[in-house]
Length: 607
Image 1: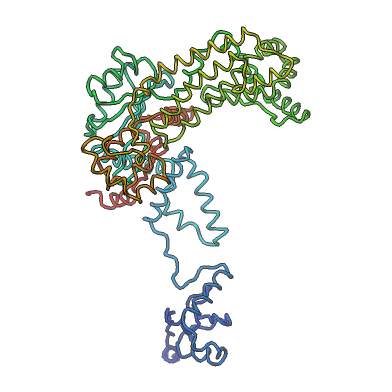
Image 2: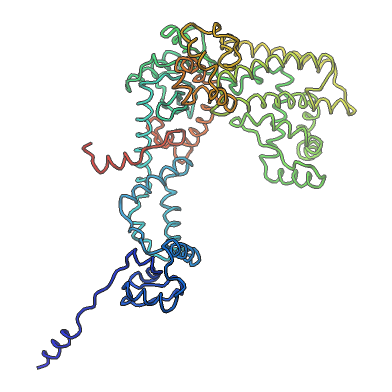
């Protein structure tokens, strides 16, 4: 009996049609409401209407009745109003609502986050413990949205991060191998010991055909199972290159340190390379840290260095002592209020350590008088030697700093080192004349009440003589390298006859090339010869220059790499296998992993 009225009600109240916004409505001055996209809003008065008003006729009627002066305005006018309104209200337009989170974009974000973690050297658990809660807080609090849908798309557990890192590292290695198979490259080898295991690291420098520039790149880390002899190191390198179909003949230069297995004449690595590949240039790494001064110190200077390090570590190794010294410095208005802590892994700062000790010498002596009288007495006895070493180490540090960085070439290193070797003779002759212009600390000492004895000067001059000989022995190969003048001054050669016959045609064209001259004026030698235009226009000339640019001039890159190695071998990660450690490769690489290719492979594993 009651069914009929219900039927009649349904018939008389049909379901209303919900109208949708069209981009054409913008030229009438309407956009969808920021809070409900089914409701139109007037840009001029910012009034929101019901869905029934989502009709061009009603919008035109509102514009004519309320804003007649705006009739005929073009769409650009209303677009500008919409942009201003979005900025002012701080909301995003709903004309094109953001796409909901999906697994593919979440996976891409997971790879990008994993790459950031690897580059920063942070533990894999960083994502799960810090990043995920942070993302949740931003979405929930700032965006006032539900974060669960976004977090479900992310894969950031420790195991997932490790897998992402390993896959990206494999992609980077694949790209590197692909280039090395068809490129000439130099290689730098260095061997060190971590926790009783001999570890060999290798880096390559090559001209990338993809990026059109010279790249320094990490090649591998290997455990040397038997020993660290030259034959073992060569065999390890040979096996790795053959495994990846990289011809050994592609190697143009080998850079090594000065250890016996590397440089020994009798079956050292350099000897083996020279026998197998006579045209390969072998270069001693410059400067290799502890050799230059420590091995040539006299007994007096060596003892001085040890006393200084003991004094510094006595203070810095004890927080209470360090605070007391800092308070004493502040009380005496000293510019510096602390000493630098010395460790072997920060050898480069040793010159800064000694200089800081010189600047705080009087306060340090006063402080040690009460805390360690015996050490204080030793420090007072070696004051003159300390001042000399601080001056010399400052000079050496300046040389070292000029050799730092990835853009330094063997041409620049040769100039810096041979120039410093000549300066050593100048330093010695100035001491003989008691001229201390190159020794600012000794000069200050002489201005005071103290006078350097002839015995002290003899010790210093003898040390400089030995240092000169050491430079000559270690870097004599640099002096023997014949670098054509036209490489560093291609437009200063008076005629083309100074070049090989097969190069003369390109020389003539380059000499009148105004664009090339402009490039040379505004770029370094290395950047000029590897410029894409120069390489394409003058392939023979740039090909002759390339071997000089590829050679590693210093141990900078291996020293930086071993710092990362030591981090990975820390107690928290003592089970890591360095040979298969993707994190190490991503930390050291200059290449960018192709995440698109990785995602595509996951979507189509058969490919």
